[in-house]
Image 1 (cartoon, rainbow, N blue to C red):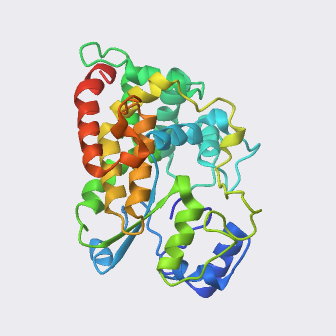
Image 2 (image 1 turned 30 degrees about the horizontal axis):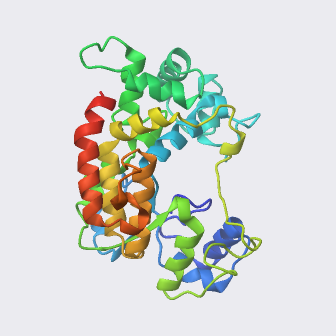
Length: 332
């Protein structure tokens, strides 16, 4: 689960590592939380994992997030302007790694001279020449201004390619490793497996409910909080985004246009929400309804758009109408 602060590496799932993981992440090692950890193995991007090692797996656990918010978060997290550390530490954020590479400072990572030179060149192009500010509105507006008929704006092309996952892996790997990246590697290959999903917007609730479904015990006062959190306060884990220098917010119009640009990502995300076993129909419908509302797919005066009237057939009709009528004029 990449949304948690600590991860259990492959072949290192021992009682000690589970105890340390739970203590580091939640401040408790309550045995009731261990079944999920015991049954979870962490994989990173599927790059170094032999397919035959994954085939015997009975289940897949995915960290799921609104693709548009995911792009916004990845850009802000990786931008050197949001580096908060004064020196490069072994556990520094990606933003700080980019910051110190840009300054040509030695890093703790073992890399060849040519690789470092290439990474610095990409960093300079992206974060110095094109987007020195971490303001998300400027970045998105640049991407949306790109036109295949007028493609002489290198920065606009660069922004658009990165947002849709077609840019270089470095310096924002989270944009390259998008839902489309995993479509052919995982989602289409292992359709017959069990699929579980943890929505990052509902991390505590989904984690606790899944733990119960896998044989664990209830943790904390309610399923909306984890042990140690005050009553009524939902647990929030961040990468320090509350300290970023520039706002990650977009104008409503820019957000709607970004949804169109990411329509393929949204479709894969929608299908994954529908596929996972641990969410009931109400939770699935509410999740996609929230996405549709945020992307401007819904007409406020249409009764069928009300949450209580929402279902998968209505979703399909509304989604196709939005894609075919609204997006051609917004995403171009």
